[in-house]
Image (cartoon, rainbow, N blue to C red; front, side):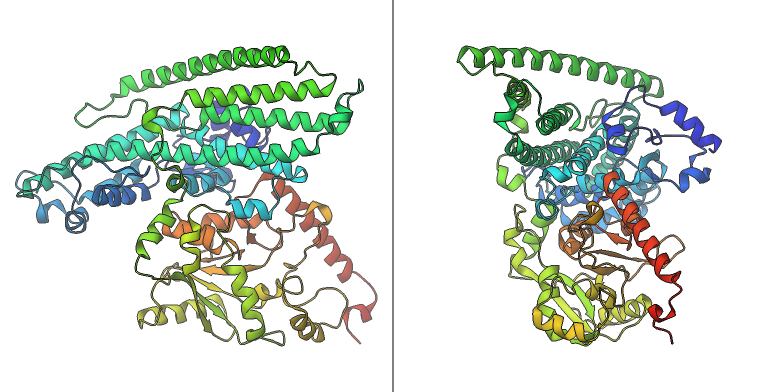
Length: 638
């Protein structure tokens, strides 16, 4: 192990397993944050699943500017402060102070935008696991880690997939544990305070140019925006996790056998279910403790910055505060559980024999944790409209843009025929899969009907030829209104082959079968249409996919500029992240590397990676067995 990473391991090792360790698998590299100067030169770290993270995402500043103009904060409430004019943002924010600022500030270097960009460039880079980095991007943007539709398609509520589902929930909680770590908080605090100082200067310059309008305090708006962002981010994540746990708990309770639970001899299946129910309570406890983002030590407008000497004191104070909070919560829950149990027994509900009483005690613990959660909800943190609060921000943006009955979507390239099947026979199937999203997602019902796909027929070629055509098509003004200009999709033979024979009609399958006379599924792809549930594969592991391309990305050795992703993720994830300004296709491409066919299926769990590894090994052994056979006729040779 490289010296730098070894040093990082020793300096950041957890003394006891945390939520983070549980999410990644205890025993793996325990390093998840580091400020080590040699980190960027550590080859082992570069090749690992850990990537540098800036904590506060740069797109948050763009979101703030939108809110500073509209006055609508991330939690849906309208500010009472004076707002910026759209003209002030468009003309001043990206222009050097020397070109517009009044005397006294005209000598200030750069523009407000470049100065803020410099703050992000100089902010501490913290080492974070790639899977959590992907989750963190979605959480910052208000996007669900996994949509309700994908969760249902993957049947993650079902007992068979409880470990994978629990790991995904633990990973989501671990993002907040990371954000609330004292060292990460220090980096977040430094970035926030530096941006606040820049906005204070920007306000002075803007106010000097205002004639009759009320003075604007951009720093105060920034303070209000961040407070609302942190509240809404934690609220969305907490609501999402609790809803997923409730669905899983319902499935486990239905599988619990109350009759066998009353026997003196414990039932093995019931014992497993009780362990899972206890795990759900642990997850709920972790939600109440970790799912928030602290602003401890954040500077207010006009206050003095935190000195380097007091930074250590802030860290110590924060750790002490967290410890006291945990102790108080534990005492509250313990006393509340005892009270609920005594009341239940007094009313004649128990004590029950055997495992049934254990199940009831777990129910009492769940109710106690729920009571603790309700007691901590402050009146000012309650959302005025809970339905609107559950709508993902990117959907609200699209709704505002489509007020005049507009449409939105992608340009999609396709061929005239695939393996003897005319495109006309395939369009309904493929198009239906691409626009199949948002059925269970709050807020999607208002925009799902506005989805538009602009189909372009083009003979097969490499991705670069598609990119060249798209750029020319875009520059000539032939893109239909509402189509994304920074992304397009390709349905190539490999992609379409994934729809055969599971998704297509009988008539289409007959045409396809005529060109595939050998037993089994051959074709032009890499076995993406294998829907076997052998080796515990999910029915969505090898679902149909498309190719998503960034036309303006120059291919490099580390990333080709395109990814394969499940067709059902085209809108609920790809479009959502692009609209939220947080799309990182290179990160998605690397996460897809664990899939046997290199397909992005969403944020990958360790359970899923293990399943893909086993399946990939099985496939490789099968291919090797075919190639090693001495029977030349088997290979189709004479």
